[in-house]
Picture 1 (cartoon, rainbow, N blue to C red):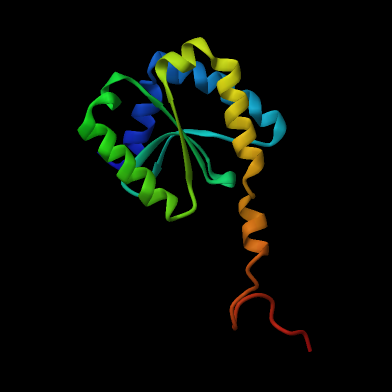
Picture 2 (cartoon, rainbow, N blue to C red):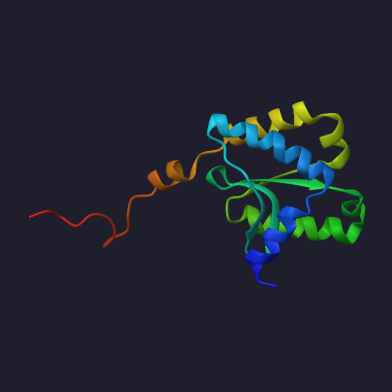
Length: 135
């Protein structure tokens, strides 16, 4: 199955916790924070990603308690961290029982991170890039 098709299928099969969090994260659009669900990145599928802030939100069920799965999660988080991404992990129970506080935590992490455009502004164009001199 192609990556985009798989992501679409995964979006239609959200867990109850993911569906609940998705509704709450969509409310953050009013503050300019746009999340995508089941977003493909490299060989991974991110539960939720705010690409402008390089922030990933993962909802972990009981399967993530398994040591092998937890190790894979740590490796994935480290790989993505090297590219500037920050991963926040919450349990299904936290989504169920503490949704308001959890969303506020996500919001605060987003607002504390620079935007993509701010990161680009910190790096001047390389030689040969940017606007050509006008004559």
